[in-house]
Image (tube, rainbow, N blue to C red):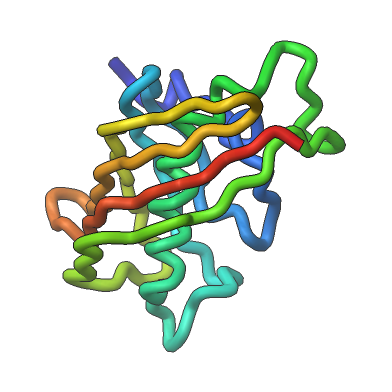
Length: 151
């Protein structure tokens, strides 16, 4: 299957907007897994000397993870330009490892798997395993806890 033909606009799953949007598109998504792509551009706010910094990788991983749970908060009537349905934040990070930093022009693919989720009234707390690659090279991995809440 050609992933280029099946890209999903990430804006429909996250409240983030440029310059804080660190994911270009969702390539695959299910209730428990997601694969996202991101091309490092030269105007990215997390670049130093042409390298996408650790904080940028962490933000990319968190946004990828939140799209799994975020898909349940957004419905058909959602307008990504004006609607701010959810607020979310990282509530914990475990076993974060940064192996290498990507550079300007690199495409990174970030995959995440939901390992646990608690849903309350209007909010969700979840734990996910996430990994970022450039080609076959693993750049980073972590276990991330997220809190997402309807506004």
